[in-house]
Length: 46
Image 1 (cartoon, rainbow, N blue to C red):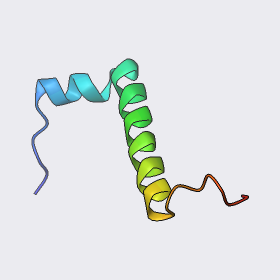
Image 2: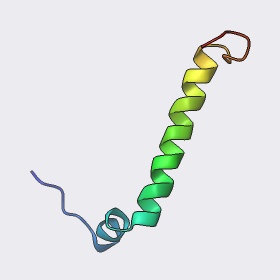
Image 3: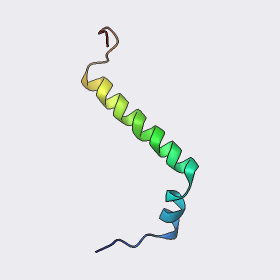
Image 4: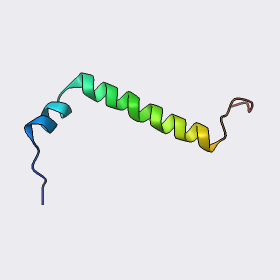
């Protein structure tokens, strides 16, 4: 069954600024997780 999308969710989805911030936030989250898993790739050459 399809979920009913609320007006607020529709507003969030069609707001480019919020999408941009969410994109940045998710990227930062993923990058930090990857960095911590590799023990902070500061000494190792990429």
